[in-house]
Image (tube, rainbow, N blue to C red):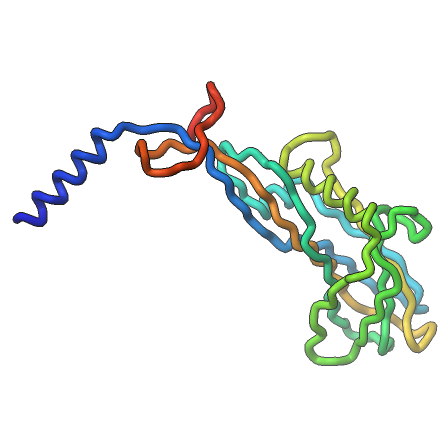
Length: 205
């Protein structure tokens, strides 16, 4: 009985504190992918894929009232899986922002991928073109902020095979690991956090 009484006093004390609006900072990471299907008889290929504004927003699944501060691309990697009829043992992969391999917006160049093994791991992409990664990062950030007019990010991959001219049948996944930092105004009990207050007129969620 004494314990219930103490819990009751604690609850009353909390109710008497009142509430206040505080601004909290959060970080969330996701791995967004572009998928490319290749079936090329002579082993020289170029194909495109798209990442949509809707898919990016769904992947981050930010709560109501979230205000995005920044998006950063942490890493890019490639994984592949071969299909029936593939005759290539090695494929090179180059990636672009845009439809053609002659585009100036190159993301990475000539990454060799060994085929024919059971479990092909993700291959990290280290030699990235910084200026074009920043552009891709800016496009993704606009998607999660809900600004800008674009609805799709077009990506392309191209390459050749070893042996030269051999049929290539595979699926390429370009994995983009990104982190979003956002803030959100929330209502809490007074004195429960040292977080800064929300801006005047900002609604708590």
